[in-house]
Figure (cartoon, rainbow, N blue to C red):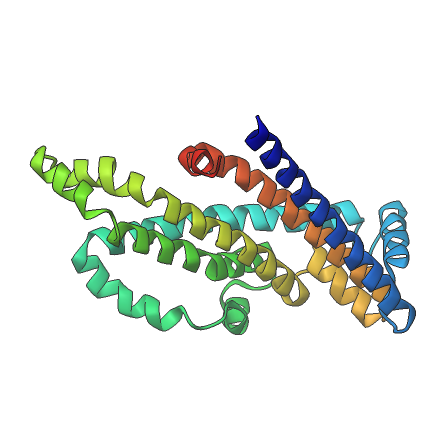
Length: 262
């Protein structure tokens, strides 16, 4: 009983420390804002409320901009997962495929997604298609790398056990290699989700007429720093919501990881 109480006390203290750190952050932000041109938290929240009350923020209402960004992120993330997992599995399982495509992948991988913008505009024009392709191009890489790493670092004991039991290549892939690679794949998906948010904001600043990135650019043009900060808060909240939903998905795909934590 005493150990349980100690654990409960420690758990409560972690929450208290988290709350204190957030409060101190906002206090420091407020003090810094009073002495600079950076908007204070109160000014930022006031602008955020005003943005929701306005009929138009730039080219459309704020809800339209939020919806546009969320649609691009969701589609980009889904396509990134499909492309990254398929490519990672093929490179990890088939040596011939790896020999052909890995050198090309390694040449393309270091090039930032933003560097491809001129070519994407030339090939696909300006619009949602270009935004989504930019998101996919920047987000599929961590999924592909983690999938490949998971496929090539399966516990050798499991491989030997499968061979002893007479498993063929298909059964080995389906019942041993892929299940053992799931934690690595999920970790890549989580990293990719953050890349999606960075890519969508950057792409919307250049090749879009809607979205939160476009709102930031419009606010910068009019030197409305309160709107810039308010939009950044919206992006942070949106990212937190997506991370929360992904954590729920992770609990379904890798429940044993959370059992270990308990």
